[in-house]
Length: 511
Image (cartoon, rainbow, N blue to C red; front, top):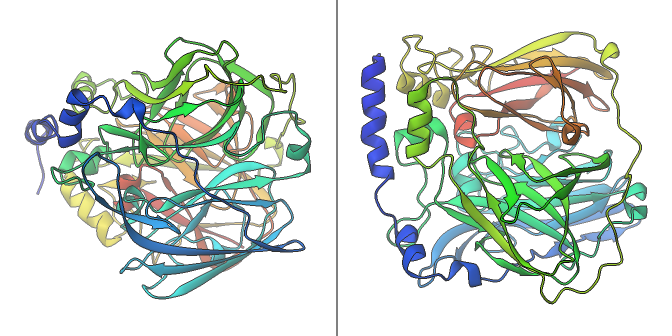
């Protein structure tokens, strides 16, 4: 069925009215100022079982019950816990062996987001773990020190499983990071900050993508969790803090900054440190992206990390911008508070430099490859959004819904092959009216520029995810090192998880 533009807008209007109704947590937050008094929780740190350079981790995918809202119990998913997973930690050069046992009652996967590794160990939709089974991922850590993460990548159910808690952080250290004069005491001045937004039903359960706009725009919640706690307060123990930020949300983009507009210092992106700290007071962080920042709280004040409006850039359509505003997709949130009134003086200062600049050579690229992300109905191509969604859900190879280069994901189709030990320039474009974070498995790429302009200073390191706004073309230099497999593919996709689940994903092999 083909919808006219007017019918489509009317459908959105009807659906968004439901989103604007008072929710359980919204009313509670208005009446009970409990959120700002909740304590910042530091996830458990797991070094695994080490034998020389071999490290073994044992992970259990499990169902649990979590106390997130006062007076309610929320059914959740977790890894070795009720909600989320431990922070895994290993070193460059280590060979890790990760035993993943699935006990959630349905198939799942665990993807090692940001790692270079064999295709059979990637944890994408081809490495499914049946309920009651154990999967072993074994690979050598080859990339530099960075804050990576792991999460479900179950075909057509990534969004739902991650939303319920199937994710965790993975720290990689190396000789260079060990020698940096920056905060590194885990849980004291080196702090993991997993930011997620969630919506709840009247009985305290997670409400997931029950309306058409939530599938089209991606799932946005009205309650912010940090490490599973609603808007927590961190009692700072040192006056210089290293926050390892992960946007673990399904779709929400954050525009992060502090309520007093103080500067902070960006020291690392997705997959590497920067050459030197970059001072800033606002940071856009899209789903899947990570950023390490240093925050000086030597004034010993109580401050709030917020997300400000301006995170989302839609196309020139005034109607689209208005709808996104009404639906709460670009709004102000308190993320967490930092109370530094009792903080002890840190032995560290903001460093002048960090590592040698990482530079890949674009002149060595063997080809330039277009990557166009689009949405059929929004382009008014006459296909119909619902039809496009269904084709993506079945894994069909037609266009019309959420597509890359005109194709929706088909798990039985390899879209192209690349050669090992080469690099390519990918021109990632967005012809839809919504922003899309673009993620590539098995590689750490360099952002060359946006719409003909050079990349910003804080984007100069190695990355695995990049936000592409409407009408934008981002050029990235993508290397393919170490591993080849002509039959088993890696993924590239939008990291808005609802878009991914509905077809904005493709597959490539390294040969």
